Amino acid sequence: MEIITFLTVTIKEILMEYGLWQISLAVTVPILAFVSPKLINAIANLLNAMK
Image 1 (tube, one colour):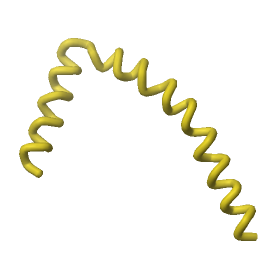
Image 2 (tube, helix red, strand yellow):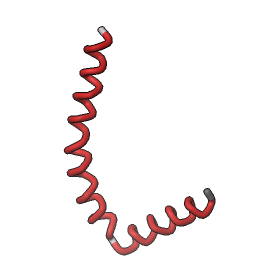
Image 3 (tube, helix red, strand yellow):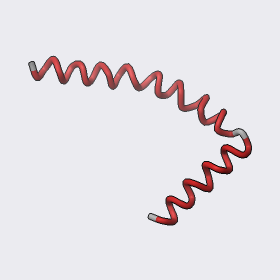
Image 4 (tube, helix red, strand yellow):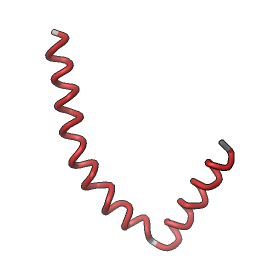
């Protein structure tokens, strides 16, 4: 697990240093925007089913 943590931190620092976080953000935001409504609908459906 320590190696994975180290790699994650290193990758994050590289991304931040080279401004690639902007690219990853540009990719992540639309995915979240696309997935979030589906998640919200699924949760709402579950709550309605439990009533």
